[in-house]
Length: 233
Image 1 (cartoon, one colour):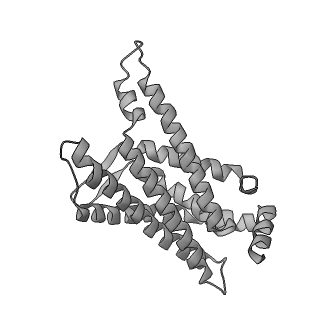
Image 2 (cartoon, rainbow, N blue to C red):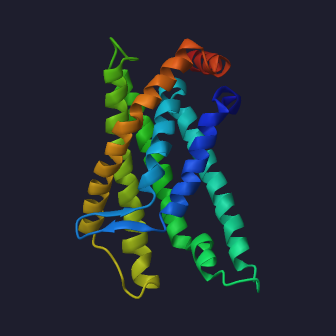
């Protein structure tokens, strides 16, 4: 019922953004002592915008379920990529292809755990902040507050959890002692969250217009009525 209720375009963009974010994370765009940004920042805003849209209209539980679905499809995609990278070929040198699409298991583990945790944090905060705007819950100020705050905090924990798992937990073991300190993880998570928040600010007006149209056209009414009845019981 939920998948029938949410417009397919939003679910598709969300799932594709999660898959692309995982692939783009293989390239570091900026690496300084106080900030590190990978290619995932180019599309991570889309993942969080989709979650914000779904949370605003359908609630946090619906957004959490779609997040789990996106993670499941991403893991399946990574498995297919891994199989493709392991199949030998004498047609050409596919070393670069295999290294990118084959992936590293602890990076995939870190990104999956971090994304699921940040999705739960983002969706819960977004909904809770929205409840604080009782007079104008559907206004621009309410939407801006709930998306900006939840995105910043959600992105911070996404970056921080990923950094802790990969660069503090596994990197010293598998990457010849290379590691980050917890402070480096926190600073990079903070600066990365600021950069990702700026992306969200730029594109959030699109999300706001979508939620307004969904409400005007009673999108997902069947699911919302079902959830309403379930809540009353």
